[in-house]
Length: 114
Length: 113
Image (cartoon, rainbow over all chains, first blue to last red; front, side, top):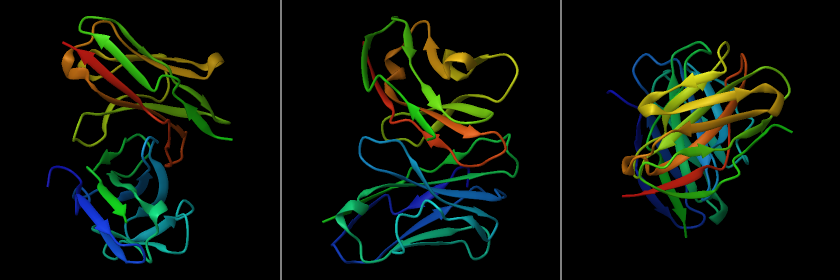
């Protein structure tokens, strides 16, 4: 597609439930990023993939967060045993290789944990 | 610590007024600087970016920003805003040669028709 696609757009989860958030990057984009945006805050880095390799996961807030990109295209962010503090918008972005390129962001998934 | 500060959290202007949104950053080393805009219900979009060269950068929709290295600032300006500029604006910094953005907390701009 023309842009970065994320699904679902909205997710309500009960505390303790596992969730999976999907990101379809722009075709041919090597780099893929996940960011977390809490209410009233700017996006914060979670993790970075180059093709299928997860090169940086330093921003994942706990071991309940797990991301994968097994074939170097679609990525899934999984959150196990969700907590209320996980409520946020989860943004995916992709870019071509090389530092001169900015990201293209998806519209995000708004996760609400009740 | 690496950080980005946007001092104006909410700004309300009338159409045709001039706009300046402040952005200051703290980062050791050479940086790339960005402004992103998020219109209601839409995704973050790149307005403009600075990598090197002329510190006055022109972006889309009549926006510009000036990098002042001595002040660690990258303020966004527009001489005459329109109702359609109503959006949230985010300043971001990235270390040159790195991939990780550090975003500010955003400024919500409302333009009254």
